[in-house]
Length: 401
Figure 1 (tube, rainbow, N blue to C red):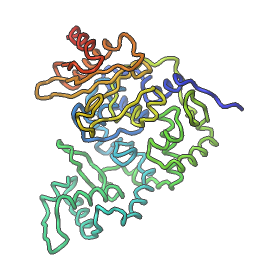
Figure 2 (figure 1 turned 45 degrees about the vertical axis):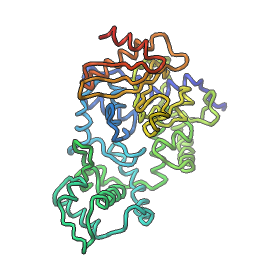
Figure 3 (figure 1 turned 60 degrees about the vertical axis):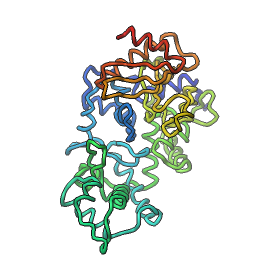
Figure 4 (figure 1 turned 45 degrees about the horizontal axis):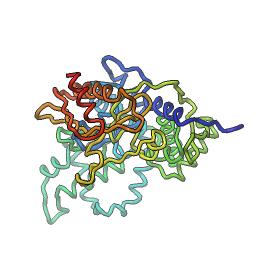
């Protein structure tokens, strides 16, 4: 049987459909809306940068529209907790039912204890931290550091060692993240007080079983992707991913396909939809699954993208915190955004169009920025005169105002 061939446009629409851009937006998003959206993205990457809005809130906004951010707080708390933080892609919110598939990673980190060169082995410190958290409940590293004796003739105690050990205990599953405080500091707690019993008591998957499950979920979220795409989604080694892919192909869950212009084989998820059209309009976080694997973004959208947060200001091409603008099934522009909360302004520090951007790009982007500003509680949009799209965008923003 011949291998199916997809055009790049078809692959793009499949990918956007898998990521939730075909779902109708609800007038008032609810936890049911959240569940549907999380089922599409699979994970929500966590990042501390807050120049606009924290990374884990943005993919939900891009798909659901304006929503109450308390939805995520509610989903990440209580006996019916839906999500928990762990190293899924990088550190990310993931569904609690993914915990058993992460146990092999926890065990592997424990076996590699000696390779944690930045965390000195200290059984006494580990035991003291776990005991203190068991007694006092969810705690930050700072609270533990301030609240415990620091006897230098015992095992010593300082914030850096405390935090490093807490991160180790979290990574191996001896602690879990109960939440974060208003300063975005992690609050650690015992897993039994964070996760529902259904997740904790479920049998751990073997390494091979976990790889199959993670590739299965990656394929569902991608719709179509190469082995490299599927491996990257949950950060699996490419050789391990290929073995899992073969298993899923044999089971009929994945179909080998060719994508026009791709120099590598691809795999289509058996439930993926091929829509005739995608009517998306969304600003994508730099940490959105649509663009976080930069080679995939270039292959699908012909969009070369690099985050420039860590690039010296004088060497930046597009700006500090640049969001791609998705219109229909194409990325048609990018904007460097900042929330000036003190003055209630959304600052557009630069605006750029992509080759072939349609004539209504500035108008559509202005409307999207107006919605974003409203969601963030900002009263005014200011467009700086930087970037080829900036003049037209400024005129549209002025007209909307």
